[in-house]
Every structure is written in structure tokens, then in C-alpha cells.
Length: 302
Image (cartoon, rainbow, N blue to C red; front, side, top):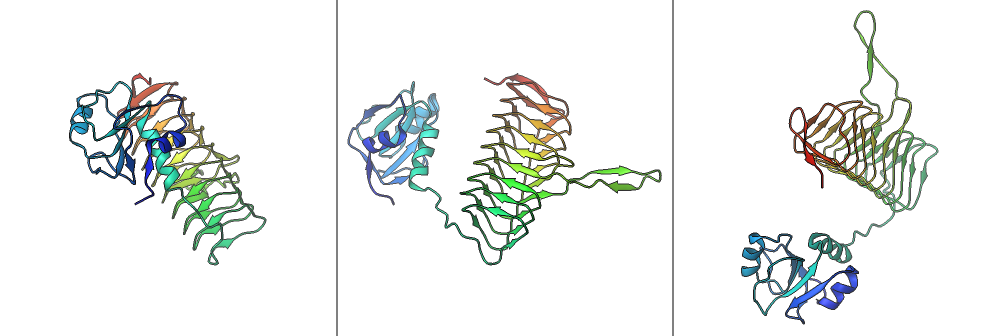
């Protein structure tokens, strides 16, 4: 349980331009709950505007509910409704206020650190391995058993979860006259921007000659593979089990769905949504939704 707080406190924290309060005016909340599990001490949110919203709101027991504008509210005098443009976003902001991650910025004694590293005010967990010539910016949190190889540059406020590997050699071979695969040395690195998250068990390979690039605010889920020379644009979200092949370029503000595959050397434009399990084998323009195997454009991404 948290300290009891009122609607006035919610308004102060959210700082949104458009907000409206309806129903009971003086309710308080002391915990966060899912809408179907809320009780008289809870704040929750409803993201729907249709009949699903009416069904949920008619039977909930919450104290305060964040709702979207345009919703039909039931006639109840025991609940405070706070109308906002994006209830889920507002709920996330409130959660972040109360459950902010606080890290003790220290390096565990089991960590192995290479030569010529520049580490800011960071937290590095047990048994992590940091290679040579690595730079990690202030506020970054490296979880246990992460491996960061040579020549990796990591920005500020980056989170890398357990067992992720950043900067290992990519999969690059050429065949000789006897069809024996000859490994191509990878002398590039990985450049990770600010406010990036890299999920557990994910792999980001270093570039062959230049860097693999992960731009600011990119969020990478668990079990994602990003090959050599890939460029990921700002604010793109990459969901679990995505595979991005070598030298692919992903634009900004994209959403790559679970278990999708991106072919090497292609370009995905800005604000593209790649559907669940899609296999993208050719370049995709801006602002579209693609899905299927092979992936095809379904519609414009509104």
C-alpha cells in the first residue's frame, strides 16, 4: 500500500493540458490495480470507449478510474472518474512516480573490466564482463551476467538486462575455391544511444567495418537478435524474439511485433508496424502496417 492521495495530487503529477473530473469528487487511492481487480482503495484505468467500457465500469469497485474522453459513464456516485486523452499513459506516469527504479550506482566486485574503459556513474551487477575501450554513460544499469565486448559505446540512462550480449562478432563468412567458409573479421563496434533498454538474453552484434547503431529511446524486449551493421532509428520498439538480419535499416517510431524476421540489407521506413510473426523480405515505406509470410502492406499506419 502507498500513501493515500487525492485527485488534486493526480492532476499535479500528470500535468496534462486537458483533464476533467466527474463523479464523486473527494475519493482517495492507496494502491494501483487492474480494472477487473480494483477495490475501494484502488486507482485503475479503462482504455475502451465502446460497450466493453460500459460493462467494466458498471461492475468495478475502484475508488478512482482514469478514462478516455468520449466514454459513456455509468451513473454511480461512489467512483471518481478522471477523463484524459490517454488513460494508459497517465496510469504509467503515476506508476513511475510511485515505483521509480532506484539503483545504487556501484560496480560489483565480481565484474571484469577491460582496458581503457570510461564508466560514468553506473550500476553493474555480479559477473558482468566489460571489454576494452568501452564507454558507458551516467545513470546506466547493467544487470548481472551481461557481456559487453570491445569498442562498445553506451549512452546515458541505458538499461541492459541479464545475459544480454552487446558487441560480439557477427555472422559473416566468404567461401574459398574449395567452398570452405572463411570468417570475415568484424572490426566495428556498437553504438547505443541514451535511454535505451535491452532485454534479457538479447544479442546485438558489432559491425563489420563500422558500427551497429541503436538510437535514443529504442526499447528492445527479451530474446531479440540484432545482426551486424543494423541501424535502429529513435523510439522504435522491438518485441520478443524479433530477428533483424545484417545491414537492415529500421526507421524511427516503428513497432516490430513478436517473432518477426527482417531480411538483410532492406530498409523499413518510419512509423511502420510489423505484425506478429511477419517475414519482411523487401523494403517497406513509411507509415504502413505489414504482416504475413512474406509480409505485405495491409494498410496505412494511422
